[in-house]
Picture (cartoon, rainbow, N blue to C red):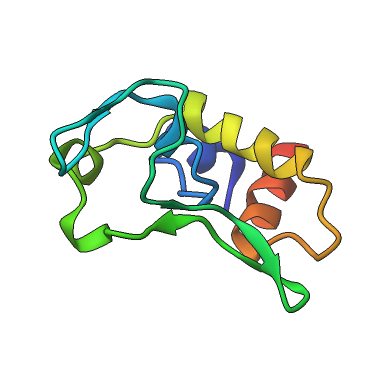
Length: 106
């Protein structure tokens, strides 16, 4: 992965869940999830048996349309990288996160 591609091309999803917290969305139940609150369908990143389990959606196949068409961008995705950094992991970071960090640090 090259720095120019990372910064100019479509970002790689870091599976951090930041977008599931940062945006306002209509849930399948009809409820509105306000921006800044955790989506109830977010399975948060966590360490399990000594390795990372990436964040994901519990209702991925039935997720709202706004989630299906969400376009990653430097703002949310770089916030996600900061989120990974702030977790101070006791396990090695996931490979995709390490790759993005290496590119940014070069």
